[in-house]
Image 1 (cartoon, rainbow, N blue to C red):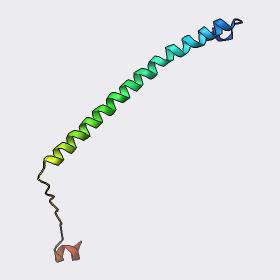
Image 2 (cartoon, rainbow, N blue to C red; image 1 turned 180 degrees about the horizontal axis):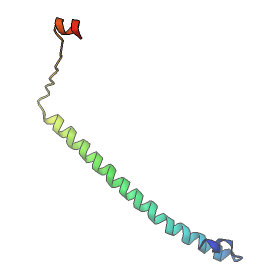
Image 3 (cartoon, one colour; image 1 turned 30 degrees about the horizontal axis):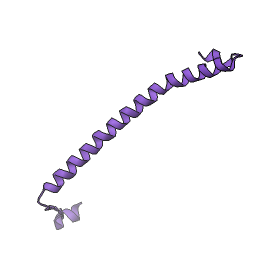
Length: 75
């Protein structure tokens, strides 16, 4: 098909270029579809996480580990 890009006829060159672009476009469309599906799954997971966080009672537990004086001197 690429050999036809150097044909003498302008119509043959046009059709060859068009066919090449049509064939290469299928991979791009498939990749875009796959990307869109992945982004959708990510968005759904984030929404689920936010919904679960919103249903919590709002309490946050903070744990502060302060070493004993002996641990501070030995450490």
